[in-house]
Image (cartoon, rainbow over all chains, first blue to last red; front, side, top):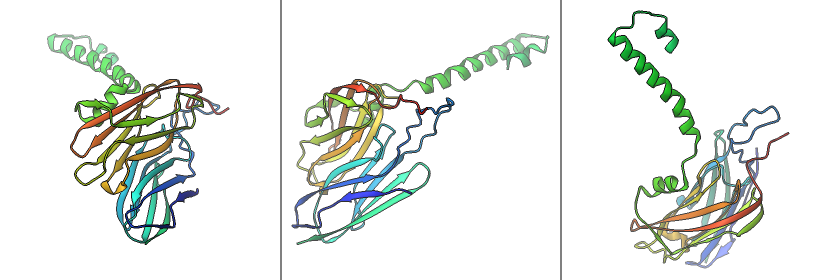
Length: 106
Length: 161
């Protein structure tokens, strides 16, 4: 359906605070717009975002229509162990977009 | 509802009560959707986020441009003065607006292992207005910061035609 883009450093020192950036391609239809015939376009947004590091939730967000299209989120975490950082975006239409990134911690 | 009642001409004391009740129902029936359409104020939205707890000023830095050309995408960064330790860390960050169709923008959940209490995103602004960030700490205290933004091209109101 659409694409997701994540930015995670490939390597980090143990204990280092790293920045993670995540963006999903999504229209984020607000439900407040009308089409040419005056009908309201139904809301269809990503309403929840979750990021896990080796299975543990490290950041999550509840999003509302005021988040811009292609929702972008930047946050930080402490590099603890080498592992997988996984991202999930949950859409109003039941769709789930996922992405993963691997990090090597030395 | 009223028409049905009027079709029966025998209006005794009980009937009148029913008519009044039906009238009251009609008024509420009309008033409720209107009340639902009017968006809650910024204060109401923040109160439901904090559960009515007192909010203190400070510790929160809300970075947002004071003047934006395009309200469809406005970069926002919320940074909080917090050591982010197990005993003292940020648990939630709420972003709210004053004049969009909906007061909430986003609620972020953080844990001590975030290392730094800083979150960035991009938001929509329907018009020039105030934006507020409210932060909940692990000790249950709330801190906030707000900023005014002037928007020259608004989001949300454009029609697809």
